[in-house]
Length: 257
Image 1: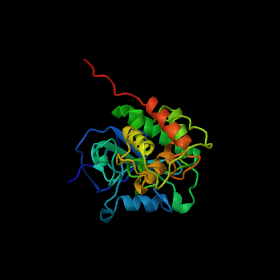
Image 2: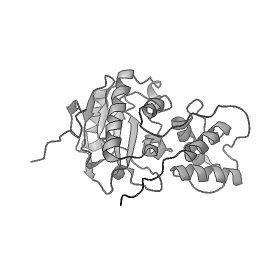
Image 3: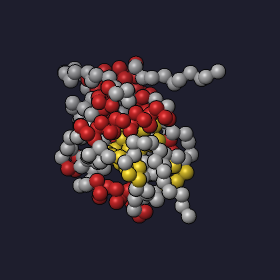
Image 4: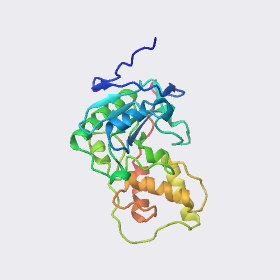
């Protein structure tokens, strides 16, 4: 007989177990946020608990702010898919995944209700505190899978999370004129840009070609950190914002003697 799923936090309002999980292969050090991208919460929850879908998550946050737990935090949920961050490809093993009910790009990028965001923030803060997750490892699905995913999208209010002490963020540099890099460009400045993106954590080839994969990573970066203009072009605002993120990135905590 299977052990019933017990909530990992008192913030949980309902438990709806999903069979789609497995054993973790690493310690949790990431939090990955998604939108459901479906017409309703019920449709998303049904999909996340259907064996044939081979997808799941740890938590779903409905529009009204109610929190549903579907997989125990100790287990490896199947929420990130093919993905990578800081050179590690098994994102699912090292992360907790939160699905936020929102239609996403296919449904016109609706706003995230205040009530829902308050609960997303509370849940995220709780998870980050319990697992000692570093601020720059609170990420979008699009950060870890830029070629495949767009969620939670450029309308997601990362600033509200950051204001509550969750996640790494800096004020985006003003969009203005100046030099920029785009698809087809090559050279040392492009190589330097890609090195900075790779240093921050994005999976990117360290060469001097601004190819389609580079544009996908830049687009993902803009969705999270420079959402006022999401076009995959590395303009001065994008580069300056990236530089400031690197300059203010939290360091690894020192070992305790």
